[in-house]
Image 1: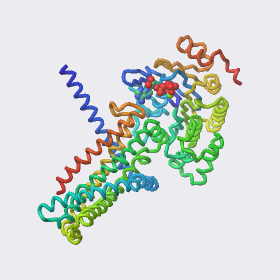
Image 2: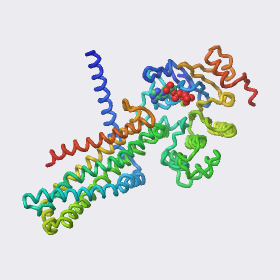
Image 3: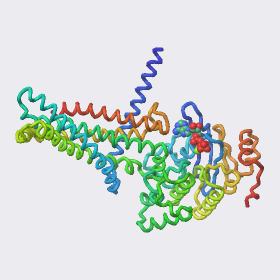
Image 4: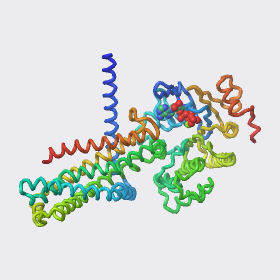
Length: 255
Length: 263
Ligand SMILES: Nc1ncnc2c1ncn2[C@@H]1O[C@H](COP(=O)(O)OP(=O)(O)OP(=O)(O)O)[C@@H](O)[C@H]1O
Ligand SMILES: [Mg+2]
């Protein structure tokens, strides 16, 4: 068995007659950061949902810690999901709860922390993410970028082993984007989680990545070193690189 | 041509079977949430306020006018046979057995059922339910079961309120406006209403409550799986309409079945 914590083996996913993933293979190693890039509608979010068992593949297997997630019963699924922290593309905050309660939700439902401990931890996270003073607001009263940060705060609460981020910085200004990546850097160093990030911030996110995969036309191309992506011979990837980066870049540029 | 027809028929049958199975499992999971600890007391109370207390006004007005109409109609019909004295028993029996449970259930469907369906549907579409699942929080225990419990408590209570207010409406129309003897009105009621009439009304209201919450939350929960409903806001609005229609019709069908069984 491979040491990968997440493994996609020959995965096919169709929606109706549209083939989204066409025999995709991917290995994600523990403690590493994988960036999934690719144009809009290429199946990045679908890939994350497959990993979470929210969608089932039409064929192929998805292994999380060596277990087939599509074959799991509800109890096993719950167990395996508690090692995940997820930031959805649309944040997916609960409309009926305010910011504080949204962030506190996983602590209240999944841990035995008392009121004060919960409050302390939530307030700390809100502080880190620059959300102080907004804790009474409801999701409908937040901007897109604020929702993202609340979603991130919620995902971080249970110190997950694997973090899935679906476009964590879309809708944030450059300064906030940098802050998010800094926070990501710090938390990852602290908790050593495995990260899968869907992102369009190509140059910035390359700095964090141990592996970059590009989804295109149902195929997935993995690059062990971010720089290699520029040397790809595949025309779609070449044009994607040109469009998103504008220029060639070396990892030393970002240090 | 004929093969196409058979194929379509088969597709529909499969889809409906699938849908029924889904809804069946949905019901089981919602009910099993009742026995899971810790009990979500506060969520249930909030839902009782949402479904029950906030429906009070609608129920009150429906009841008082229904009672008054029953009083009026009953009076003119009974007068033909010279038995206006029977008005109290006619009004109370039709309320307790039929009008009370059925109209309460229909009003709750329109007021609370539609809101429930839209709420859950929106939560499904905006991935809030997926998010709950990913946090390993059971969406049934968290979202659906409190609604089941709340509606099972609220609808019978609202039905009883409906009955009392309705009888008062009948009294207003019959006694106060048309001059039926108040003693005859109430003694007629007392002598003709038996326990069975009351328990029949309560059984009906419980069954209707289950139908409302099952259909309305279930349709919302599966908003993305319902054929031809469309997506996004449009999908939610179509499914909500569908849920209200479906649960209203089911209430009337089950009213007939229960009446036939219990009478
Ligand atoms: N539930 C669904 N039913 C039908 N089609 C779907 C569903 N979810 C996604 N798709 C389709 O799958 C494709 C991939 O969607 P996905 O959301 O994964 O794109 P993405 O790569 O995340 O794009 P973006 O960068 O815009 O978020 C799209 O063509 C979309 O229309
Ligand atoms: Mg996406």
